[in-house]
Image 1 (tube, helix red, strand yellow):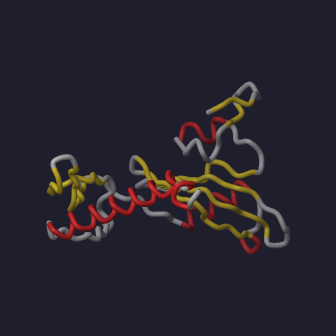
Image 2 (cartoon, helix red, strand yellow):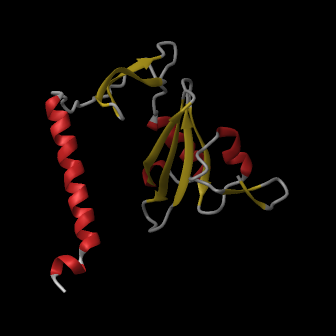
Image 3 (cartoon, helix red, strand yellow):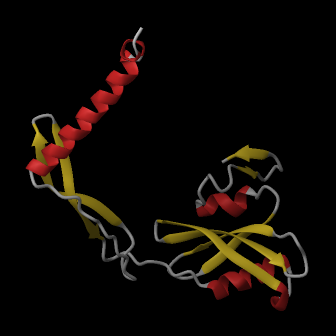
Length: 180
């Protein structure tokens, strides 16, 4: 048997992929379509943005591509600011670590509903290990709601709507571990 007879299916797949790619390239070139770079900018006065398509280009009767998205912002919604001093004060109160030995870092940030949710780490500089913390900032304040290495209490995470990926489970008022 020849090489081509033994490898009919893989060769057919490679050839089909090449022809599809070539057809798309030539079709885009014929219609003078170019790739557009979209830059999103944030402002200190807006938070909620909606992505809205503004134009449609038709390449073939069966393929429609949407280009040129625009950002529509709600001007009445403010963006909270992460006040690291308030977070530091909250960590000092919850950990009883002295200010000169407190080391903390802000890890993940997640914005939703005029709030920024924060997950970070905190430790005493004289100790090797530390703990995690959850905090949130809204338009008025930043507050640390949980510090520890254990599963948080439901009262420390549920009222603030932290992402479930950050804490899948919590301890309810009966002391039982429950799924959030």
